[in-house]
Image (cartoon, rainbow, N blue to C red; front, side):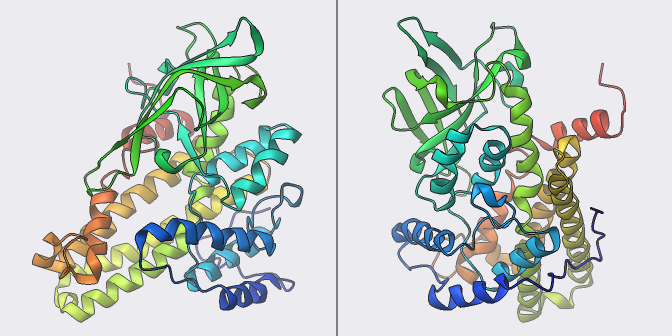
Amino acid sequence: MSTLSTEDDGEPTAGAAFLGRLRDFVRDHPTRPPRDRAERLSWARAWHAALTDAGLAAPGWPADAGGMDLSLPDQIAYHREMSRLRAPKHPCGLMGIVAPTLIRHGTAEQKQRFLRPMLRADELWCQGFSEPDAGSDLPALTTRAVPDPADPGTYVVTGQKVWTSQAQQSDWMFALVRTGAPDSRGDGISYLLIPMDSPGVTVRPLRDLSGGAHFAEVFLDEVRVPVANRVGAENGGWAIARTSLGHERATAFLADEFRYRRVVDELTDLAVRTGAAADPVVRQEIARTEAGVRAVAANSRRALDTVLAGRDPGPAASVNRLIRAEFDQSLHSLALRVLGPDAVLGSREPTAPEKGRWTYGYLMSRASTIGAGTAEIQRNTIAERVLGLPKES
């Protein structure tokens, strides 16, 4: 399968009857969320459960995992149509990370147990990778899992995870834990699925710059986890984690290509309405965002093409992650320039333009070059593992 170029629109195949089914589904299941924020999560979960039951979810998953098993052009057409219809995002964004990992490395029992409830949003997941002293240097993690001497079929897990997105509402955590010697680094890490309602799990929300509590720290105090919940071999979790990280930095953001296309159009309309489009600097920056959308699209499609060919995105996925993160920041910086003085009005101000969405997006975008591996780490990965440059001394 050849890699799509930037100009390739990913036209659907002649047999793409799913597009008509998608439109029929949305007609019968409106995409406008309820006004009450407290009700939105339940509504989104119900919406995606119905989408799954209709056989219209997981366009890139293989059929035997419950997906649609679409070709690359059809997957692109699917995401374009879902964006056009303004379909709600899956309430568990991390599904795009853990699901490919289970599909590739999980046992038949694990796939049977977890994939469909995950897809229907019956169960939500969080990621337990980062720790207070092991963020960018992830192989230094210290959360420990040791076999229970009285019950060899059970691990006892103790440690702490931090910057854990959606931990407060999650049912499960996919986590990296140390099962080898303390100094074993990547050679002594296992990949474990931990129920969040287990005795010994404590979640403490962390308030961020936007005023929300999207992250949390998670404390694990002698949490008992079945060995059957380990994905892959003991001490083999680091290689498996590369699948998770590769998808996080690559294919998990394919749908964002079309969301960004819509957002750029909306920002351009805002510039025209406010008169900011008369500023030649603003016009130049809008032109730059157009180029940015094309770069995001090209890299997302290359990454998906790699996965469909049966290969891991690997270190090249860092290119996709870096481009997307920096584009997100530049896009929202331009939005604040367009808003002018109104940019200081946050989402909680009743007079904020468009309910403060652009200011909120700007604040959230500050984390784009930190979360899931800092921009500096991504650049090092690209330099050393893609370009073959020597490591820093």
